[in-house]
Image 1 (cartoon, rainbow, N blue to C red):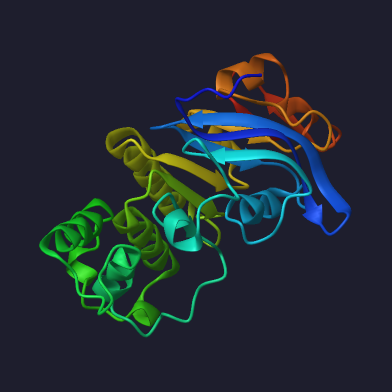
Image 2 (image 1 turned 180 degrees about the vertical axis):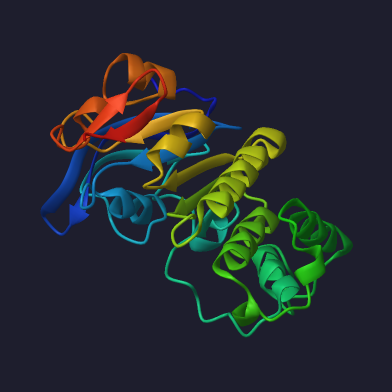
Length: 259
């Protein structure tokens, strides 16, 4: 398979895990700019391991990963920070910062050695505050925020970093349904309007089917990848959970509990 130049992220024959212990293998997918993609699968399927591998927080076992036409191994850490921004679930020790200060940290890969923001840096911070409805909270300390607000701040910081690719680990955990939908719709907007490639892990399969352009299912077998419609037609969601408990309704694109 020839490497297609138009892809922001391109993964081929990837095996991931720890040392020699393989958690998932035969992972193949590619994403273009402006695409929102969810990674789903049962617990232990390797969702977080995949994300950590894509962010270079751990080594792949085998296979190829390209980001913006470069093998993932080639950029320096400083160069990678201009290609990829990351929002992980382990919240950093930055909750003492004010909202605006935390978002401004997204500009660190670009600021001069004293870390002062240029006018264009400030515009990006302002745009990020606005896009994630944080203008009124800009002077709040991050530890005073609700989970949903804090999650918006972390994604706004990634937006301010202004990388072509954004990777998020379970951005909607601990949120109620309204705030889950709000975060995912904001991510969808960021992908489509700002032409970002956004990849995130999630347990919210019903919402991912409704909002994502592409989905990667880590099922431990063939790890299917495609549009939600393609995956529904190919009946890949039906084998995700033990069928005696939960069934997938392809008409509604959602799971139902078997009574």
